[in-house]
Length: 140
Length: 408
Image (cartoon, rainbow over all chains, first blue to last red; front, side, top):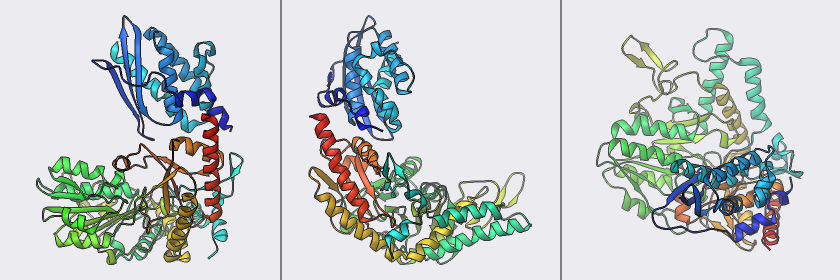
């Protein structure tokens, strides 16, 4: 088990300098999710217009993996159609299960691939993505 | 008593995790089991396994003797007046739920009060929330001092003549606080309330005498005191058990069953519906034998010594916050490293072979009181040594270096 496989530089960068942190304000689609086993929390807000995620922000408290994953996720889906965001989420799930996934599509997020070798931490990485899926569900 | 010698009784400790010798510092979650307990359970299944209280055959008698013998051992261990006051359950959670649903729910009314503290484990909190919701009773909290202790003056101020139940954790699983449950029981009784003690973290680690504490109920788990998971105990005073209704109905607990009504056996059997956890009771008896051989006063002294050493060693780690009282406390240290989430700490420690707990420790209200989302906790038992603490302290330095480096 190599720690460097888990804590890649790009992950630490997102943890230290989270992108799209905060709230959109006003009447917005807002999802609160908790990981009851460890206490990680996230509030994900999305503005969806004509099927496009025009804005997305998150606030939360959690470990480096959960917060970096949220930051990377918001960066990846902003400006993208909801379907594309969900397809990305599907690829992310595959990555967490250690299955083959579309690396081109993942970009920076691929840095989280090492998480699948740390089973206790997979839930940390998937929290933000669950929030995304739930948000898309509520919208449709 | 030599710790290194004791350690050899625990086969699981002799292994490498992630290439490093295992340092197990999570005994407050569950303790490891000595060979003597594992062998007792194995012998039971190899030689004596049978159902209890029914077969006329030899194995049935052996299993019944083993199971009822375990009850006697538990009674002696906590100095209960009679083994008939010992109910076997699945663990502390089930024991506390049994009190909440079998005793409190039928007896409490609107205007009655239940008094607990903010440092309760969820299992001594949620059952009372449920009782309060179902009966209209009020759930009240004794406030906590800033060092994580409870003052008797605050208990006096919170308990009133409307209070029917005071329930308190004996030793906090997060702060290590040792609560003055004996004195609290006296206050409860003076107001006509009963006293429930959550002994999950105390019974495994110190001498607990139910007659001395004068508590009405005591709940604890076997798995935190070297017995298998799935076996626990509820002790109750005779009057309290008389007033409690069974919550599990079915085989083993009945006297006469008619088409439309039934009657129950006497306590404790009427509370043990279904085939009981026989092998668990056998394992618990073996664990009690093991602990008594060492002596509970020695266990307490070991814990105190190691905790003192850990507090001293960890205080020297820069940027580390320790939670809980500075005085006497149970065998655990809860902490946070500045700027590093406890999950991340735990993952790095695990890569060094060190097993600790990270999270909210089933005490979310207490986490809010501490104003943290989560904490890391190292907890000890008699098989831990000062070397283990040294490895922990070094691994914490490694954690800081790793994150310092990774964060840049």
